[in-house]
Length: 407
Image (cartoon, rainbow, N blue to C red):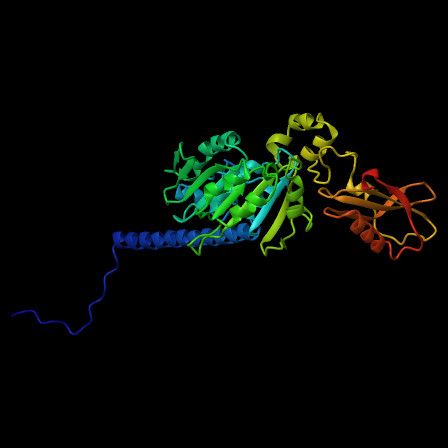
């Protein structure tokens, strides 16, 4: 007879040792995977926090291009990210003014002051911020073509490391980037040279040593070439300078005088501007051994104040090169009516006429200039009327001396 099936439930056998090993191995593998997943999430969180912090402190350029081999200064999460993606740091700005210049959001910025502050290098780096857009076109200028050689040589070392595949066309003095972006080198030796750029459009224009321009005509004309068809590209005017030079006065009036350094202001033309002062101490590569500073200290007083101290208030041919705002400018106060007052007038028509009013401190005989008239195009009669008008609040007539050419 065939065996009949039993109604009793069959007992399960105990799992074999191999099955237990497989289960344990699977559990351990899952735990390892969970730990790695948690670690990856943590690294991503750290990376996000670090990137946010860097953006907040303006330490990352909008082009995502740095430069130098100082990656050890970056947060651990950033270093791990660079290693994993095969990226590297091509340039890292010096702390202080150089970083502030590269991070500035104002339309028109001057980075100027002492020699050796890293200004020219920053001028080369700044246009890279938009080289990942094909519509980006930048123009870097100097007064003459020979003065561009050093900038071009530096760009040959830097640009290929920052953007692999970029090519330099020697004849046109033009860099072509893989995205289609372009950086052009040019010169502006005379005012008429601006018409070389007529009909051109640039999203970034920079002038290295802009005080070499005698007037602001060329710079204003170039500003009319600043435009782009890509709304993602911000357009900028950037310039660097040392105090002094034929254009020092208009540069000072445009950037230095209107507002305190590093403070944003709006010009009469509606453009936002900023002046960022440079100091030798901001560039550790030149300041560290003190040799360059010794060379600047050996210069004549005027050049020393301009190139070492970054002083914009002293000019070539100044009668008093020792002039210092901190020493020779005092806070306003009510001059006692009984103090002796004097004036001196130097007449000019094509050049400015100047009239200075001063009071004499009776205690130490210090002369304090408290009013100034400085204006060109005045005839003798009109100058006399202006002086009389300005003296309207004086208690009594003020004696003085007048340049004999006025007669």
